[in-house]
Amino acid sequence: MRHFLFVLLAVLAAPVLALDEATVFEKTVAYLARDADCGEATTDPGWERRVLTMPHDGYRLRYSRFGCAPGAKGALVIAPGRSEPSYEFAETAIDFIARGFAPVYVIDHRGQGLSPRLLDDPDKSHVENFDDYIEDFAQFVEAVEADLSALGARSDLPLFLTSNSMGGAIAIGYLQKVGGDTPFDAAALVSAMIHVNYISYTGKRARWLNLRIYSETGVAVQGWWRCAVAWVWNARLCHDYASARTFGPYQPGTRSFEQDAEAMMTRSRARFALRTHMWDQFDWSDIRKAEYAGENWQGPQIGGTTNNWTRGSVRFLREMRAPESLARMVDTPVLLLSGTRDLRAYRQYPGVFDAPPDLSRHTGFCDDLNAASLAADKGYACQFSAINGAFHEIYKERDATRNTALDMVESFFLRHAH
Image (tube, rainbow, N blue to C red):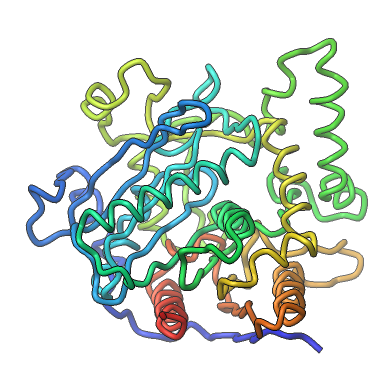
């Protein structure tokens, strides 16, 4: 018997306090171009980009703060997914601020977004050690708490966490790191990176052999060979693209929206176009000149992952799902929210069995976390919910879908506010 709440929604809800899809592109581009901080902001929330120097290696991490004063319902931290800059959550931040959650703090994970790149080739999505993401996030959360104190927030102001994709894995790693000392009242992990559908990055069909070659074990073996063996005669191999043919350097002008294609990550043409514009056309020169002197950053665009990143992700996810790791995160209530058409998360089966993809890896994670929390006499720590038809980037989905998600996340937060 499963110990989770499975909610399958038809996605018919009307928008609530959200930007309209017909105008979101124009309004968001104008908002970001205006670049108004809290001293200049008028009707729109201020957007401030900040630098945080990591004490363990001196890396200059970036993050964004949206909003200028504590909200009535609490403050919010967002952990984006791989390749997502903090500013891509401007619309989501505006929505949550309108709902009473402020400020909204969004991290730019090292090596991506508004943070400096780690290799000479700025297109490569790379990290030396996946645990660096967790250490960065811990320092970021401390900076958030210090900023809230400086803003005069009351000591019992609730603090909430939400994420997308890889940000969910980082959030889980952080919750496992801090255990009972968590500052978060609740966490809503959207399309969380629990177990990656690696074959979805290759363009290959879900056949029996392909599913094994690009299974987690198959990817681990490939990473081991390239980073632990083949580097002897090719020292750069571990820093090369894991799949250069299908997931290599970013090529400006190549993003093209295809309706109802899961590889788009969203069914919203306007929100897909927003990323394309900010990567291909937005003028970052003034920001680059003023804020990145001597740093490796040309813009927010980024390409595919390196062999080292891929190998590290497998090792991290396996440790993250281990029972002893789950036992360390039972003090924070977790909503695991997924879309039934999440190409990066669902489990595919060989075509000969004619079995549709499913979210069993996400439901299984929730089961395992609940087993750990029940064993610790903490009750049920995890609630699983699915939105029917939603793609991977739920916070960037069409209006009805994303507003259903916003309602669900807000409701979950309010139920668990202290």
